Length: 350
Ligand SMILES: [Zn+2]
Ligand SMILES: [Zn+2]
Image 1 (tube, rainbow, N blue to C red):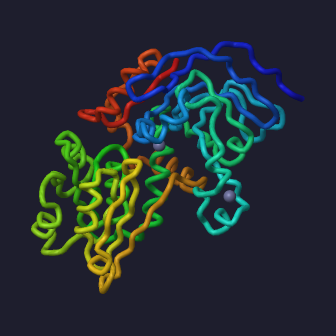
Image 2 (cartoon, rainbow, N blue to C red; image 1 turned 90 degrees about the vertical axis):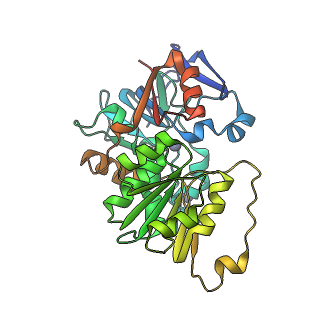
Image 3 (cartoon, rainbow, N blue to C red; image 1 turned 30 degrees about the vertical axis):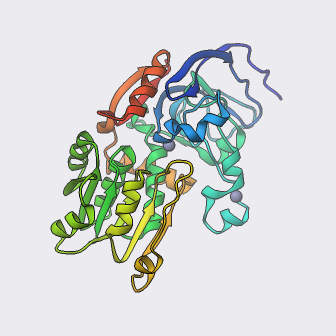
């Protein structure tokens, strides 16, 4: 049975640039076998949504990948979900069978890069294709709110990064860049028993938030970070650095701030053509340092993120600074791209 394509109008936030996001109407997608139609209740704006150089060649497009909502309709043959269920979903899902998936790198699978919601999370409704229903849709426990559930995606990415960067227990962890991702990293490092947590940012509001969310020491990114680090860390540099800003200054500070035997995890994206020269021997000879990276979250990371939010091991609600209706999405994008006194900004389409 094929469910007919809907003819209802759908209101969306259409992205043209960071300063130009328009409210437009398009046809509401119909759903086929195995698919779900989700009424979007809350939709977070991610730092990557305002990564203009990465988005601009594909505009206009409907962004939004941190969604939670209610199932409005389910296609023929859907198992495990029904209309009315509260869910959140992954926009990118892996094939589970390719070379990368088999080696545990599900998030660099070609299928993952090609999958997405239709049309995108800044919309009144989204269609979840059947592969997303099978591999990336999660029931929200009754005591977790829709807004909190929008953090499952960003926390899944953060959790994966920690899996890749090693055990922080008893070690000095430095988190550079204290937006939502940085604050989640601080909390996860604390949860996993990090010895000392040091945060850096160039924004005073975010340094204060870093302290609130568990950093022992917060340092201005405009200072001599390696020098300050030794002065507050018993003469040592950092054992683990998680870089949550793509600012060239911070990348260079990170390289100079990692101690022998340490690991730098590159979590953020730089400017499009950024090239960072490395003094090879100074960095790698007789140092045993590890440079690593992670991308997105796998099904396993999403499940874990939902559990951490459900058990209140990670506080997410306190990171929401702004809420906007879909009609005000242009203002919402301006707030996120200017950063200033904002952390998580949530769009509420209904
Ligand atoms: Zn994101
Ligand atoms: Zn794959």
